[in-house]
Image (tube, rainbow, N blue to C red; front, side, top):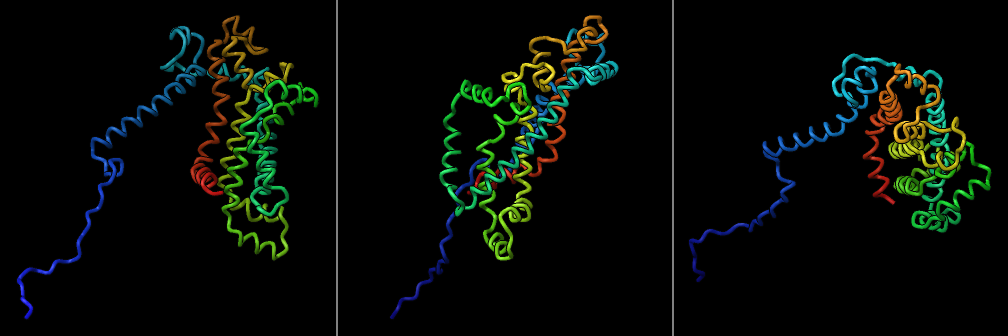
Length: 311
């Protein structure tokens, strides 16, 4: 006979969940307050210098002299520095040069990068593996500054605006990001378009690019900021002062203390503060990037992460 015991029957054994890392735990009130304080301090550290630059550019010479330099508390607002800069002198001409170089250069760079990335994303394209290896090699090996200068000089690009665009027109990193994004697009969409008789250019324009708006916006911002902030090519290949972009004029004004053409007399006679002019040029150089960045911010995370992970 089987002995009957009064022991209760045990259920299935439950395993205790492993402890979560500290950074995954729900933050306490003190932790939230500390994070908020850190974020506020970080914002102040970024915005306070910008505030000083903007306020100083909008201050009169008397206010700047009373403050002993940079102005933190505004005492009246005047736009005389901006009016003088935009009155048709060297700064106005440099700003127009920077805008045109940025627009034309960004359009050219995006066209070349998109076409190259799409071709490299099609594994059956002619010689795509060797072209990809060649592009990757340029990221690790460079001919150097002197051969590049000699090449630009031999091609007759010195003292031309093409010297501000062609030497830095294509970024291999941006091409790889675009290629990775294009490779993540469903092949069935492209195959169905080919069945309907669409060619590569139509597929790229009608299917691939509309699905890649996020990464295209990010790469466009990268190229535009690069062209707008570039100064080295102009200092290397341009000798005509009238052809200099805005960044090079700002370097002359801030670092070398050279007044732009047309403003030297106003600064010497005391009608205009040289410091206000310096800050106004800085604001003009920062304004386009500050205005365009919020419109691209919503695409930034999606475009960069997707393009970097896939492919």
